[in-house]
Amino acid sequence: MSRLLVLAYGAACYAVFLVTFLYAIPFVAGRGVARHIDRGVDSPALVAFGIDLALLGLFAIQHSGMARPAFKRWWTRFVPTSIERSTYVLVSSLVLLLLFWQWRPLPYPVWIVDAPAARALLFAASALGWLLVLSSTFLIDHLDLFGLRQAWSHASRRPSFEAPFVTRAFYRIVRHPLMLGFIVAFWATPEMSLGHLLFAVMTTIYIVVAVRFLEERDLVALHGETYREYQRRVPMLLPWPKRRVVARDASTHSPATRA
Image (tube, rainbow, N blue to C red; front, side):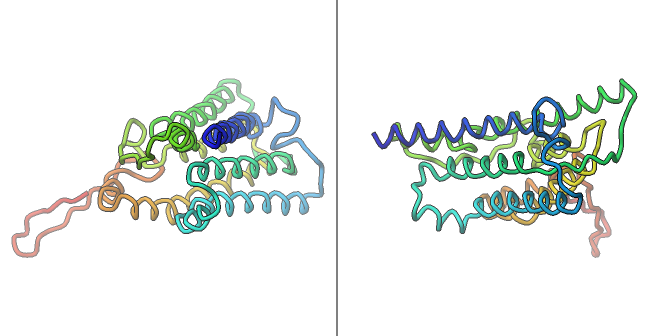
């Protein structure tokens, strides 16, 4: 019975995530749902700004804090490892749903693109960003990322294992295509309001800081020199080629090239 409960719990947490992810698309786009980034509870501008910053800060603290290895070691003293990832996914989804519910719009226009072709291009770019996010999860391990593999391993009495470090498709171009997809989806819009700009700026800063100083450090600790070599070859977020540094050997004066 406990194995079935773990599996049901993992599936329920995944269902909450899926609803949250699907709602996030029209929320950011500002159309198609009752409450979105430019429509909701009206508040004075300064109050709205403070509430929105607090909601974004809450998500950043929860999302990064619960993902840290030290927190996981403490957390799994109380929560079984079979549902630890599912619980993280559930809490992250609930915090995002709180953000969607309590977000205060700041509908002051920053830019508006009227040209039909340009509008279509921006909507297409945003859609491609969301598609990049979703497809990137399958290029690593979608089931493991959202806790389903751990729940299934427990239910089927199969030992869990650490997935090997591999780079496929987009991961050969940038190290974090999933995060790049979020950035593209948040910024590609023909109608940028002040509230949308606040959301895009703060989430982009959070992504860059969290990836650079937290996630990358954890990946180096986990994979060692394999990941360091990957860092030297592949850029973090922006898909431009890594520069090659040319140095001269002082004794021979012959060029030595390294990535």
